[in-house]
Length: 443
Image (cartoon, rainbow, N blue to C red; front, side, top):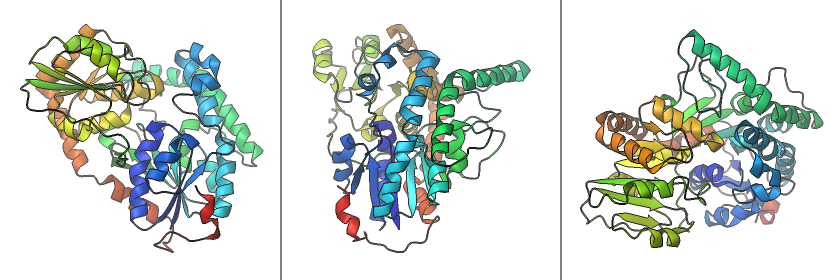
């Protein structure tokens, strides 16, 4: 079976798909990957042939403000609207043209798609190829019981709350989604595809995919009024080990009463004053009471070590989260969905401080389910972090709820589930990589 993987060139979209792609390849399928050129070494390290963006603009965590200088001045809904149009929608036609060209050389049976690439309708209707969309964030499909996206809200209660959500949804459609949605309709029209009235842009992966691989568990989602039969909650999608970033070894021989882990991930990790610094300030003077493990994602590690030489503060580029979370009592995060799920895999309660890129929605889910505390800001004070860490470490309800999620996720096998879903969409005609004339076209 021939499988083309397609993703944005951003860690949070690329990383969750690496485990799936490698598992499919090891299961005997011919897997190729289409993404930005900056990720070519990482795709090649997986042993997977690579196709670069040709027409599509490569958006990365590092080049957005260079590509769009006006973006740095935008805040709140205006920033979300801008990103939705420029980063997501404007590339849709270019993505499709690239993918169509690839199919002439590599006639893939299934497209395994990062859900944010938004070519589901074009590929299904224009190429008649099944699409499996991988959603690396919480469920975005609209539902009357679920509050609008990007606002960090929990489900409404009572008539007044439901009226609030309806009003905010209409406002979101007007101020946030409207520009990108109109642009999307025009792009599809340029390719001869008419979009039905009432189409909702963020629902396209859920309505136009053959199967939706939803990261996480249904229990982490908000209650919904209806069930989408296309959607399969598969649990956490842990990235395939790359071997390129050796994690530090932690000395566990020192005797501390509790261990706290803090990170800003690998994307929004340049400004340590957002979360890492106030967390260190909150816990650095706790002596043998608290061991604080800091993962910088490779940004500014040496400076933080010089600034904070305390014995209980350990600053590293990368940590083996599978190891450290087995020892952790609390995980302080800016709300990246992958990191939140990894914490819950180990039954560790959370302190969340994130707003951008839908991280406020993830934090609201954490708070709603009693899995931790949402600080509702990207720049929390040290005192607020200290109080929140004390609560999640001392109050047993947080650890108990996190343990319940851990036990649920241990029953799931994400990679095997996705393999079965993919194989169910097309007959397996070959179990070895194709030696077709195109082989030299992938780099």
